[in-house]
Image 1 (cartoon, rainbow, N blue to C red):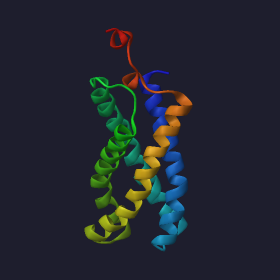
Image 2 (image 1 turned 90 degrees about the horizontal axis):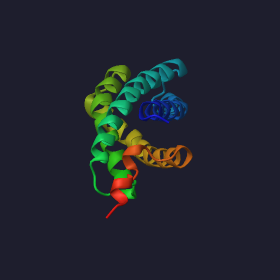
Image 3 (image 1 turned 120 degrees about the vertical axis):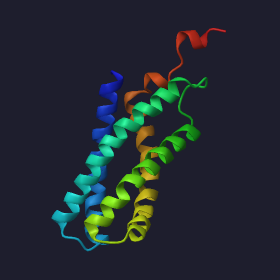
Length: 147
């Protein structure tokens, strides 16, 4: 699978599962109508989808320059923290505006979502790699295996 196709498939699967979990959670936790919660989840997902694609392009470029290949737990956790940290900076203002709450309240709310998504991101990328194989950036090349 080409790197671009892999990234697109990964992002779509990731966000589809995320919407299925986040929309009902927003509706319940913030006492929002189902439609509003679904719309906010879709907006958040669209933003996350764009961020996911862009972040993975940058991450895989960095990863391809590393001497140690493969995806260790440490590298997976770094990926998850980088992805979720950047996403939080983008989404906190969106959530604050949508739910008509302060940035602090949106940040605190995002912390709960962040914990879920940090674990979800690490587990999802591990499962995705198991199902679809590692990207080229994480594989040792023939040259790397020679002396």
